[in-house]
Length: 532
Figure 1 (cartoon, rainbow, N blue to C red):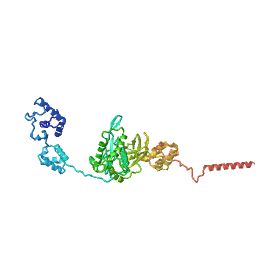
Figure 2: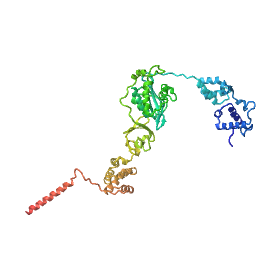
Figure 3: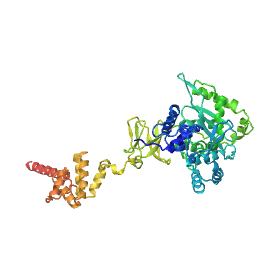
Figure 4: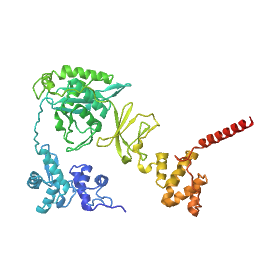
């Protein structure tokens, strides 16, 4: 059986309904489901129309014929007052305690703390939400003071986005983004519309603005737009790496505003509205280029010639004073490249446009920044440290630097024959000689054989391995299974010593051949002389 509200709660619902509160407001005040309120209000209306009997579980007493209201206990009644129009309005349960609440508010106490003090120090019977709403109204009545900050010439430029005028695209109106920048001293501005609010467009518009103004300010003040700020933080924000590199190239500092405080860039807030209302309102353009051409003409002939409402001077005249204070433009524009944050796969590569580029193995499963143009791919970590540089590859191709591989994953076979022979030489002279002969006779197949020989050093002594290799050399055996057989069965027959074939004391076989030929020739000559 479903849960039902008690009679007291039902009476509260009907009474608040008769006071004129909406069902949503009643649900919020009583902290119950709105559908429950709808149900009991509906039942009450049916009762008023059909008679005094309510269905089971609803208010048992109908409205008082004399007053037209449902009788409710005195402890839940709320006072009402009449406005000048004669209609009734609710008076907060906190109103009798206004002085107490205002004192706590002026001390800087939270609504929670004020509510706790009301319960412990007064006879207040209301709920926390009543206090919360009452304190919220006090906050709105509290006047805020602001400090106007003016900057020196060439010091600051503020940036903001807004919506541009509609553009006809395939017969349909589409609104681009309007990016506007304003110099804080002179209010000289530059406006341009783009289709996307991304990092590349922001950088290119700022670059064109610098060249249009003929110099660079020392500080850029954007809001926390995603194209410039990855993570908003008043004390230490995470800037987009590409935007930060752009700032370093032009020698400018980026200082985003405090999150949720648009007045920190108040000069640009109104400037965007100004161009929307004065230049673009009611206009429709055929292309992005047409709108940008119109904006440049409007900036020069309308915006620059006006008397600014705050400075009370002409914008163009003030800019002529400010322009010499701007930083000089660098000789080269900011390099054009694309950028993207990518994950390093478990094979130590990132996938960029279906091509794959290696990254040091320590960054596996981490995020890195890839910057690329038509020929070069550069990979950075989150601290802007360069990790790798690769030549741009076609889709489906790999670019792998062996230095990026995990040493644990590099096979000894990849280290080559010299590495394996040197490793065998550490085991003894016979092992080295046998390894060299194996590589000589078995070529590439011999690499694994030599690797197998070196692995036996974990189980057998160097003396045993050298005796086995010496025996295999004597019998011209180049298979690893022969070595294993000798080691397993401890069969080390006495091997005849291998006589050295070349030595400084040993004559060459050719000398013996010449000596034999000489002796033979002499004997033949003697026999010939004898017969003669």
